[in-house]
Length: 139
Image (cartoon, rainbow, N blue to C red; front, side, top):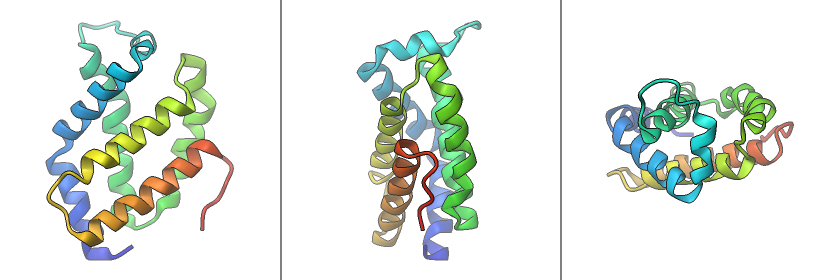
């Protein structure tokens, strides 16, 4: 992972966080309306706002940490936790994979360089492998 490109990309994710997270949350709720049941709307949140806060913003921050430290394995513990906890609340690996894929698809719509696009693909693939095979260690 090229350091300067990773840092620039982390900055882009911070700058565009709200629009990225809302867009991905919206797509998830359209494709998987059953996710509304797992959001625990105990407060006066709109489903898109709640899903953005509890899932997509968390993903955004995790990706930023991976970029800043240039260490995809930083995500392993979070993804392993998700594998053990989220299915009990109706969130499947398919939901998680879609969120990751759509998040990076939206990121690649930003004005980013070819090096940054390559980094998004690398991290996306790493996350997808960890979601599908939570005990797999990518190199």
